[in-house]
Length: 141
Image 1 (cartoon, one colour):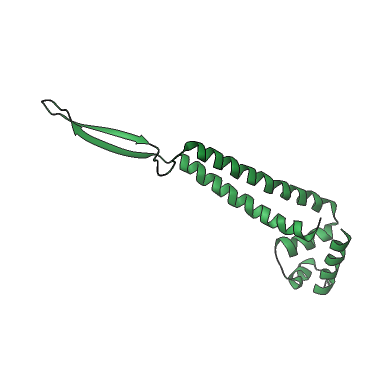
Image 2 (spheres, one colour; image 1 turned 180 degrees about the vertical axis):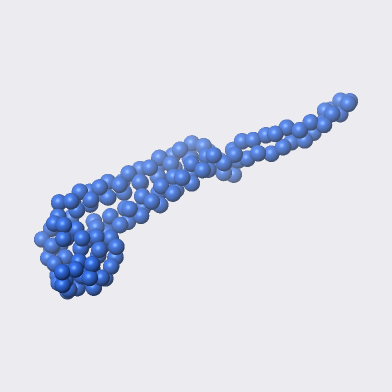
């Protein structure tokens, strides 16, 4: 595991959220129903006026319902691929020392400065010390 995969974790988490939002949008498009009323009269006497309510999916929203299915499947695949990366990183995080888990969480995931990380770590930690500890760990991994 290296720092690149940790950065991918952040992107994977964001991608999962964005993809879920896209999936909700696609499902909402499926439910978009257009309604209208048509008025007219009979051709023959007594020319009684009639009104009909019509409803259905607008072709401007969905030109091909199968396209929505294909797009939704594509979004689901994208979400699953991002979830795999997320699970791999979380499994790796469980195998490393707890102190390093905290350092990675504060620096990589929360994007704090080294000074902020040192402050959160407590126990007289310095920014340079925490940074060096992180570098040594990543070189060793």
